[in-house]
Image (tube, rainbow, N blue to C red; front, side, top):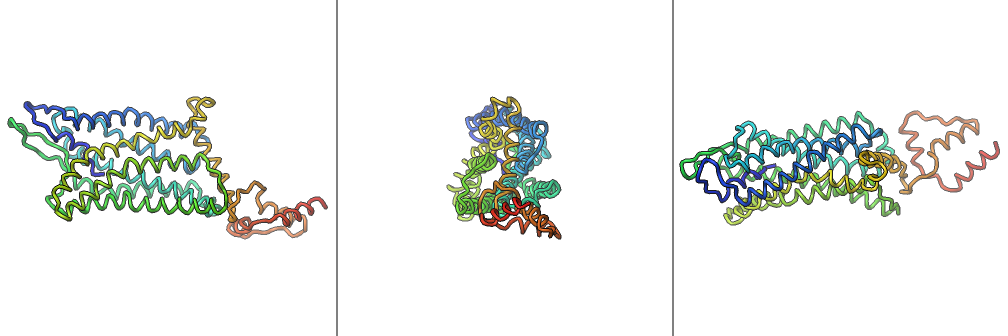
Length: 386
């Protein structure tokens, strides 16, 4: 995330002493960051505590939310640095390493968040369209591998950020020289175009294309099957996706606008993008604080019964929904009858020909076949004969 929250501190300021006055844009940034930290940091810690201490059986959605909340809480720790930068009026006082590090971690958070949401969408798609494959893949080991892969990918994709952020000196009126943590592209238009296009492609176009593909397939599948049940897990994931899009799309739109201005050498377009960037970046930063609020709304029905453990009840509900979704058969119907493989095994035993399965894939393929009503009646009549 090429964060320009800090750029607000350098605009429209004419200091008369070693401490700069706070501009209107800086005051807006302070308000947004303060609200994000006060709501988001304790809120995300509460989510982490709820998952670790109040949820006995954690679903895939639950564990993904845990990682998302941990990433958001971690990045919100950088808020005090930005607040000091904006309110102190003395530029960036924490050194070049901290300048690069806090922006790098903010960028990591952006990639971790969006790719965790991608994984949530893929898990939902797999559970609806390939339920038996989903059951085989839903193991702790495979989930840990995927989570580790997402974190490693986020750290790798964020590597350009430290190279394009620098703590530069700036001479101000009255012989004042201060340092500012600002974007730095070595005076090259190509570097600017690369950074902004890379962020928008890998942080918006690719993941949102994947998310849209997954949910389009899920919607088509459910409509075809006339399976209209929508559980809490599905609503929760859709709320997280919508919130991320609302807070991050303006940032990526500004990226595209600035790239267009750079390629066309249009100073007016570049100026408009630079003017909007501090505001949309602060707005995007607030996305780390909004998810706990969404969880409160999603779990509001559990508050009266469970009290402080209401969020644990919400995540346990996503676990029960995952189990019910996995029984969704190829025909698209929600299966409330016993597992077909168990019925076939019982029938074959009664007939004196034990049902043998060489591997799990074979039994899954048998279980995946639809058992029609005449067959079920036949099974029932055989049992009555005994």
